[in-house]
Image (tube, one colour):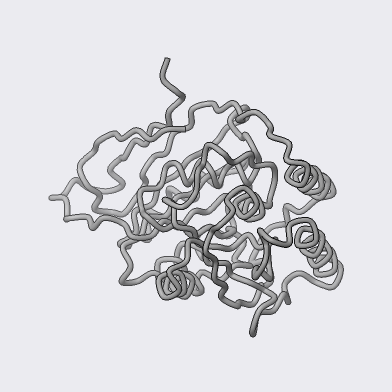
Length: 290
């Protein structure tokens, strides 16, 4: 019996034309979204501008109950551009692992050797993406972390209360895992770039927001580097940080510290549909394991 699979169906997003040669993507930008419709147009504009000259695919993994998927399709078709844009919309029953599970589904669907994860609310500036890729290549790293707490990094967009909580959570993680998190100033960051060949997706047990911590603890020996950045104010919408997410984080921290190996999460097949650019390659189907 084969494992569940993710079916990536590419569709024409505009008039039928002779397909232009599509370079193999070097970089995948993975964007987990949940009710972020108001941020999509500005986010896509800034990502496209930031990665000019880098063959890039953008993969949205969407857990929304609003019209975010429709906005992604509409904006992609209107903006065009050179980035290939795909959408995985996870419906109720498919949203295994929350945001962390969305990132893992995106990593499975991506084709590029490098994957950059960032939030859709523009608190993670897309303009930092090329610096992460350059730092990873320069330092021969497997993981480049955008850090609010190294060099010139700042956490202005958190506000005093959230900044205190973030610092406390990060300090607790480093206290529990001094070897695995050594040299990482911001293990709570949701903004990072990873070499896909350096991680073993089947070993991950994502729960909630803190997928970077999961990667670092379950993959000892990852070569890491950091790039400072300023955590900005949210562009639109509301923060998804809740007391429930905080409790989920504490549970994940306990599981990791005690070495509890949860069974692999059951996965319901999800579909990744290519929605751009305006002159896409011929329609075809590809399959990647889940």
